[in-house]
Length: 240
Ligand code: CA
Image (cartoon, rainbow, N blue to C red; front, side, top):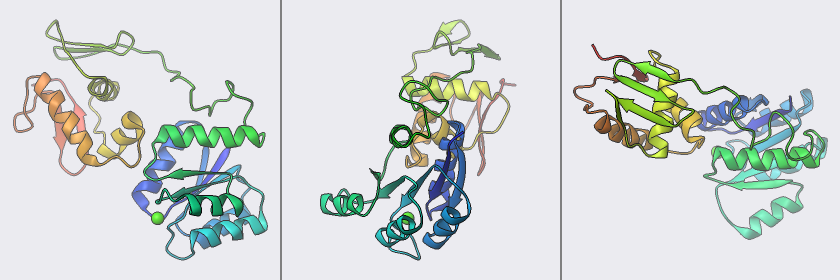
């Protein structure tokens, strides 16, 4: 299992990155600032570092040079600016690749596994548990909740025998909630596991939930299947 050090000072972004990477088979360590990152690189042997350049204590370029001073570990820098001169300077300073924020979980996984393949921490393309293109292993099982049935294998959902016309995202959202029927799922978790985009706003989830509610014939004020637990998240339940 390859190990990755995530260096990011924003706690919610850091948590999302940790979740995406953990879910894809990486052992993840994290640091919230540059000196914490240097400590981790010195003390633990990670296979790659994802380095946010906007850190509270050290300039990102300096943090990169200091890491390079003590280790040849592959470093992917995450920069907020799509600035060619800056990116060239970072690559010259020893970055192995870069990501421009906001980046998707898919892009992160693809670039990370490419870097790890180059450095031999992952087998060549195609193999490897942490490969970005690896399909979900779990066999799809249909779920029935009240009059609602969701079949992830066929990618269909029926309400009282009528097929629901859902968008791809609405279906993924419903299927994820169905897989966790009765459990409260946070919006952050939905963003990480359904959207796979740590930088997407919570409101995106709200928009999709409200259109899903409409198709299920309910409103947030009078929910039947999709119960909001204020401040915590949402759960799919059988209507009472
Ligand atoms: Ca930052």
